[in-house]
Image 1 (cartoon, one colour):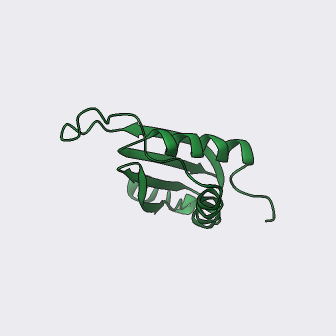
Image 2 (cartoon, rainbow, N blue to C red):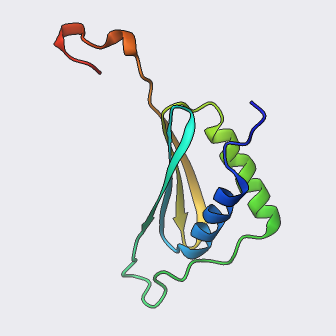
Image 3 (cartoon, rainbow, N blue to C red):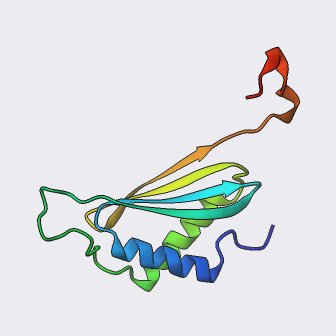
Length: 114
């Protein structure tokens, strides 16, 4: 699979989201091996008055390239699931990857699906 998982226009949206969030998450939802949606969740920290929603320092071109490579790697073989960027203080603090597995052959066992 030579085609990138994240297209350049989508990556531009991701960079804008990261640059605009001080505290919160950006969730990438994957279904059938395709990036289906992005979700943004801003958190307003009451212990940091006046800083809500301004984001952190803008990502440098080198940071954007590193982030894109890391996201491509996390999303590469994901069929169903999510990748979540945790942003704290305007900086990406953590990347979480949750993979969900579909077993179509197990549907109907004991009257239920998975």
